[in-house]
Amino acid sequence: MTKPGTDADMATDVDRWRAPFVVGQELVADIAFTPDSVRAFATLTNDTNPLHHDEALAAGTRFGGLIASGTQTTGLLLGSLANHIFPDNASLGLGCSFQLRKAVPADAAMTARWIVRTITPKPSLRGVIMTLEGGLFDKAGVAFVEATATIAVMPHEALSLGARRGSPS
Image 1 (cartoon, rainbow, N blue to C red):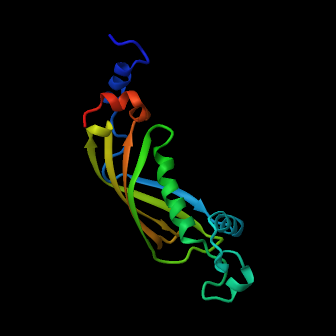
Image 2 (image 1 turned 90 degrees about the vertical axis):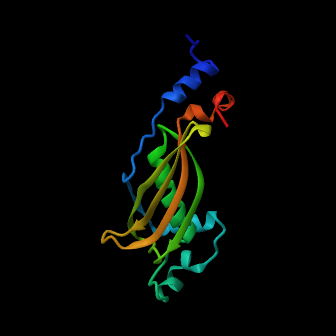
Image 3 (image 1 turned 180 degrees about the vertical axis):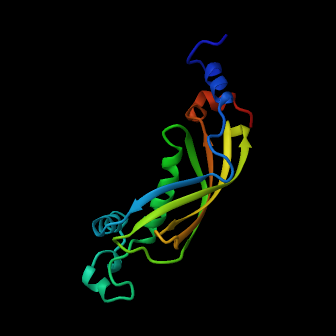
């Protein structure tokens, strides 16, 4: 029997872990944009595009008002995915791609939706590699952003040095 808290005990806990998702599972979250959040995010990321800051200028464009930056829309979309994983599990982003289909208005109510496409065991990480397809959609189901992501998901204990030392390469 292993002593609680030892590397061997931690490795046993990690080995009992099972992926908390299934292929085809949908992960959904609501995301609200506001003019203040659009301005604040653009300021935080050094995006000086007046379409994110100047309401009067933006009102005279084909967008009819302020729009969220691409970094805000994609960042919140990825953040929604992370929120489905934490606090119960750990994850590491391995890759993602985006297609920005439509400008997101600064007062939009959107839905972030991800669908699990594949789950592949990854023993060296003591977890799985998941691929997902997703996007940011309005209430009518129109895609404003489309995305794919590849992530590693594992128990928190798999991130510890003890779990790494005990894992196969």
